[in-house]
Amino acid sequence: MTDTSNHSDVEYGQRVPPPPGRPAPRYGNGIHVPAPPFYNDPIALQERTYKPWFVPTVVVVDVILFVFEMVVNNCPGHDSVYGSCVAPFLHRLSFQPWKENPLLGPTSNTLEKMGALDWNKVVHQSQGWRLVSCMWLHAGLIHLLANMICLIFIGVRLEQQFGFLRVAPIYLISGFGGSVLSALFIQNSISVGASGALFGILGAMLAELLTNWTIYTNRVAALFNILIIAAINLALGILPHVDNFAHIGGFLSGFLLGFIILLEPQYEWVKSRGRASVSKYAIYQIILAVVAALVLAAGLAVGLLALFNGKNGNDHCGWCHYLSCVPTSSWKCNS
Image (cartoon, rainbow, N blue to C red; front, side, top):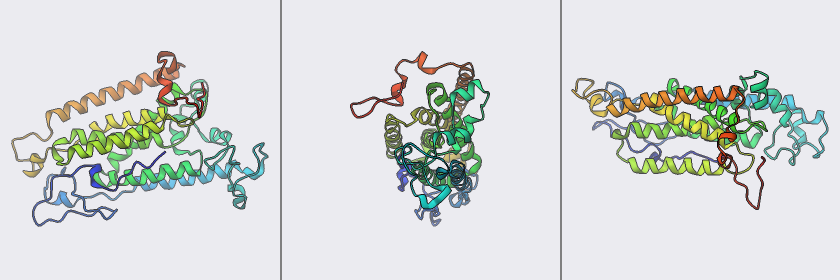
């Protein structure tokens, strides 16, 4: 997992500037950023920001759950053929031997016990809740830190802009969508992590730029920046032991949700406080939202139906396994 953050405003492009004499508000990172025009008062909206609390809450919950993982794991309480525990001074919270878990975390058995995504248990033991629980667990301290740093950088910014009522559904549904696709294609190992939800936020950012295209002035640079970030992180997913199907499923889910949840009124409509003859939303925005809603609902329905009927996505797509791991002379991929 790599940092998908970007401190510059090119991430969202440059919004239409505020009225003369009205300074652009300051976001939490200290950068002057024009507020998004999606409220009826064109002056007050320029100073409107949301106080983020969903993303910080997710970070706190994930950290607490990781500590609980290590308490349950209790490395000193059992022997390992890979050697002694890492950081033994932490006692019960010490990590499994480096050769067993290089991410500094618990055993795979502990993760499975706590709710890791396991195709066999989801399909044959009616434990569908694992499609949700897995996104709150992490394989190790390194895994946790990488995901939480990314979430803070891109999630807080988006929540400041749109509020938790929009960001929370994107995060949660994207994580679920990533789990569904992962379970369809990776059925011989367990999977954990918030990466699917994080990629969902990235996908939603791309959709937000496209559906609100007319209110940006630096459109091409913003589009290029988001596409490069997404491409780099998806490319890293072809490394072994990385669940790129969760990344892809989360990204696609978030991309579709962005068209539904993050659309904003046209700037001309807001500027006139709703009195202009122009419609509140452009026709293309409405069409994109409707199509995205239908595709998302159909995709999740078909995916869940196939999953709980025991289907293996690799049986219907002979090359799809390369999306998650490409074998080279330096490493091999599990079948």
